[in-house]
Image (cartoon, rainbow, N blue to C red):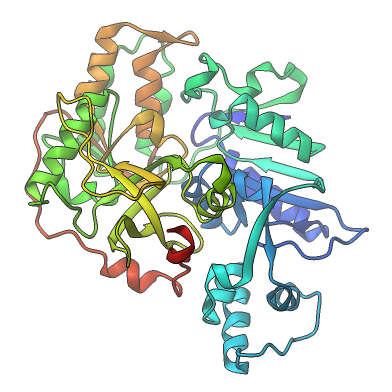
Amino acid sequence: MAVIGKAGSGKTLLLAELCKALTTAGVQVVSGDYEGRKSKDRRTLAVLAPTNKAASVLRLRGVPATTIHRILYTPVYDPDYERIAEWLAGNGERPEIEGLSDEALDRAAAFYARNSSIPGALAAAGLRGSDFITGWKRREEPLDIGFIDEASMLDDRQFEDLKEIFPTLILFGDPAQLAPVNQSGSMVFDALPEPRKLTLSRIHRQEADNPILDLAHALADPAVDFEAFERMVEDKARQDDRVVWGGRVEVDLMARSPVLVWRNATRIRLINAFRSVHGAPETELLEGEPLICDGIELPLKHRKKRLDLEARGLIKGAQVIYLGPGRKPGFSRLHVMGAEDPQVSAASIVKIEKPDEEEPFIPFAARMGATFLHGAAVTIHKAQGSQWETVQVFAPDIYAAARAGRVEAGQPLWKRLAYVAITRAQERLIWVVRNRLSKPTYPLRVDDLRQAAAPVLTLEEEQEA
């Protein structure tokens, strides 16, 4: 069935409370990091999201969410380290492992108690992913219950895969968002019969009303055109500092929170302006530049390596911060935003698109590996499923969509774009009305990412090469 509702209607809160209730009732939560021996008398639950960023929003609420990919494919552990995983999960005695001290095991146990992540716990003990994960296999055993957040992003193929795994499947989605590109304007829950849909309405009010959600819900009024909506944004900006009427793009925010645009040409212009004001050389990336994973370029015979990269968060749409070159040409050290074990080193192909040029400039590249586009600006479609504390929406692009007069699933396209864009903001919305860029007040940085990260889980560069 589907639980559907617009932003602020309580979908995520309901998902979190259902997860808590099921856990209290004795249901076993499966995270995708590691699965121990299945108990015959306990049902299983997995909470999934299409991207690492969307899963991380749930984890901040205490929900042990993971990506759909991590449930479709499960890790195969080295037998020695599987004993540690079983012990951490409460299914075995404390093991003695050659080369691992008691202090290392204590660190692993302390990390697991805080985060419930087996790979993170093993990393805290000083191990790398390649030490304890020997491969990946397609799931053979079904699970019992699946909760899928951001279900508006699912395509038909993913939905069919999930139905093979879960006899009980609950989709949580927003019908006002943009449908996947290959879905002809429809979402997978649209085809469900009406009795299988629970629609939530925003009838509750928070003590402090959220002006961003008020603007999002105002878009449902057929009488509101683009000019009227902009007047509403301007009025809100005068009343509440959580909405800002911006005369320029704030470049300092772009490193961690991309500007949201509709047109590809706008995205490319903003990216090149961002690199220019930071003095980035054309032939290389600066540490701290944001990237967006655009997929993985590997031949079929390297299927295991593809799974290895995807399992560590390098899936299409993943947001990444460049930390510097790897030890070998074509490798990059990367911080995957929202991933539980965020720091990886991987063969990479980085593409910097140029205005009015068909072919992107590639500052460096491995022959094959994860491919990246620059992430200082992204399309609203690609931003779906993600949230940031502060979001900048490039209003001239929304205006261009309004002038185009396009309609998607009975709703003006500009309204869908505006709705998705402004609901990406958790705390503050900046509605940028002019095609200007501020100067940076400080250089790009990565020191905070290195300090915040757990011990690094790297990919074996020699194997990837």
